[in-house]
Amino acid sequence: MNYTSLTAKTRAALDALAPLQSILEETEWLRHSNDLSVCDFSLGNPHEEPIPAFVDALRRHVEPGNLWWYTYKMNEPESRGVVCKSLRRWRGVNFEEEDIFLTNGSTAALNVVLNVIVEHGDEVIFISPPWFQYEGMIISAGGTPVRVRANMTTFDLDLNAISGALTRRTRAIIVNSPHNPTGKIYSPQTLKALASMLTEASGRGGRPVYLISDEAYSRIIFDGRTYYSPTAFYPWSFLVYTYGKVLLTPGQRIGFIALPPEMPDRGDMRRALYGFQMLAGWAFPNALLQHALADLDPISIDIGRLQRRRDRLVSALREIGYETNMPEGTFYVIVRSPVAADLAFVKTLSGYNIFCIPGSVMDIPGYFRLSLTANDGMVERALPGFDAALQEARRGRAR
Image (cartoon, rainbow, N blue to C red):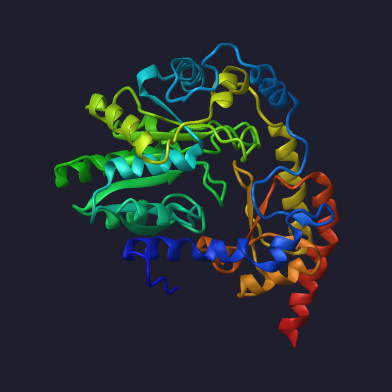
């Protein structure tokens, strides 16, 4: 891209985001985005009515409870208390309220953390296939993104590749578990090995290499598996979370940053995070969501139903003839494209009113990603189209 009036850093960040922007701004995608007749597997948007308990919670708290109900809100003590109590119960870790920082979603949380810890020239490792915005956010914070490929056979972390990427300039690594888009949950053995590696690298470099744990999908776990937070194995960690996934309300943004109680020098980090929340465009959730948080925290979409949808979609696609993974968590299924040009095949699918994300946007060319937030009716309506598109691709290869 040629943005002659912009800084080099801004151009680099926008270039990193360009593949996703090209999809979101594509005419056909815009045309279908509000069309109820299509089968939309593209983004993690809801395609059913919101959870009634979510709506009820907002209604209960919309009427002012006092004169200051809708004044400026920051890391409100009541909100911190809700998160702290929830984390202690859920994770069995004695988090402290002063170590909880309420944000407007995990995107804001990641932005705050990166800007606090990264200096110009610092390297930040991220795992590929990545979430769309990691690379651009690292650049925007002044860092140098370092892409490390996951093991594409097991979808696990490639510890040898991570070890080879660690240098004296490494400041942080972003780990996303369960992983978007593969759905992989990293095991305690893998996380312990990673922690040992980061500890050694911190000693060599004379400063901590931070672990940023993106846990957006940590409550969306299938098959009775146990979730292990990477922050439980390494003290120099940030736990980043959003409620938007488990509530399936991505347009109502509330999340948090949590510091593990073992993190050294937390006093300085507390002040830095709090300050940068203000500098980063007021990265706090709005008043209504904070007032309602005690009611929102225990609410969840029906994970069992989501798992059944996963089972139906994966089994049907495999029966048709596609190669797919079986995600252990998250909203997503990745499917191998029957032709190498995944973008071309995604356009073929759009001809059958099926919309999804091409793998090349996520650094996995030759795949495409489906979101399980499509409703059950969409899944059933889409199956004949998936079949027809596969047959069309096979005929094209035969010619």
